[in-house]
Image 1 (cartoon, rainbow, N blue to C red):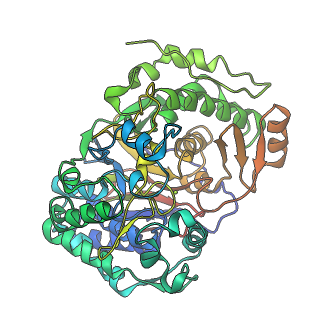
Image 2: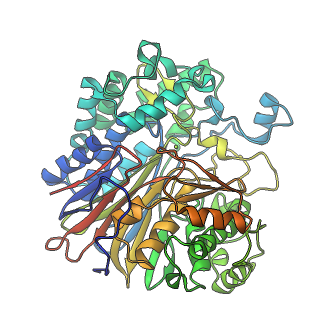
Length: 540
């Protein structure tokens, strides 16, 4: 679908769209190159995504690692497939377990340490993707990352900024194995200083040789259990062995003749669908793109979406409302009527009818497109690194609650609420765009803002990526430097609690976009990479 983009529309940026028949877009150039390498060797877009993901665990360790979780939505040439590779709680985790260790007043599992670690799902996700859609031997996909783990790489500017911030947090530096792995010379690496993680090369080799078996049912799982036991954690080799990622059907909603697809709960992708379902009730294209009316409407729609998501979303079998009920058109119209164009509001959840992270994307000339996201949650995750294996573990368990009335109550074998969400856009059943915007609860906000810019305002993917963003956060609206000053003042006049500041790393997210221009073997794709990261869109 060759959408009528304005290819000259732009914002201050040093990037232009990249056009190619085979393309990989990531937040680090070495990962994009790893993906291109396997594509040039005859690999599929899935092979490229896996190779890029393995590389990302090394070159952006503040955002992801070998102990991360992942999700993806991919177009396999005929239909969309979703993969939920988010990990489960150890069998020992009950509300009583946490109250016994942290007191009756505890409201969530801790933010760092072993009691924030759920079973890491990313490696199992790589294996599941490769088994269905890989063309090259699995070991070939690990080879670029193994080389970089051993030889090292020069640390880039934006990653180094985040790394340095983490090095000042005692909640991280006090965790077992963290300083040994990530603070060589007793500090974070400097920009352009070489960093290597040879222990991770050992783990990657074991993963490569055994197609992930060593990770979940072998040497690595045994090391995880032993290290957990030594430091008061509950994770066992049996918890690791029991894990299986889940192929899922994406949930979707139409918007302006296109269809946006997201991973179903336990993720927050439904927030983007709810917000767009509300915005659709308005003629937003008639409002100036960066003007007050358009931005106020989007902010209020996002606040309404989050009110419902934080109330109702968790592991699907524990939710009191289904995604279909939350996306009911009549209900969304009712929510849309609550928006007052003249004032900001604080919304509670409605009553629907009963019934840190890295993002990358790859596409090949055969038409396969992969929307892929991988995360250790907060910067450097739990802070726990299993020695000898370079295995840094996520802290996704902190997303559980100890509130017995919540769908997200912690429980053995249960998956927590997840913030990381890949996205995909189709038109009349045909693939159009694989995309995502990483960064905590910024992700559905970034999905909505960029989709509106492309579909309502014809901004090309790179311009939509470059445009200044806002972020609803804890009752406030944060606006990025470069945001229209009159609009910012107008938002304040409507009652929004606006704070303007810049953070190139996470606060406004970072996206990667691949838009299909027509027949992939002939017209190819247009790709964009967010200037808020060190990344690159590259193709051939």
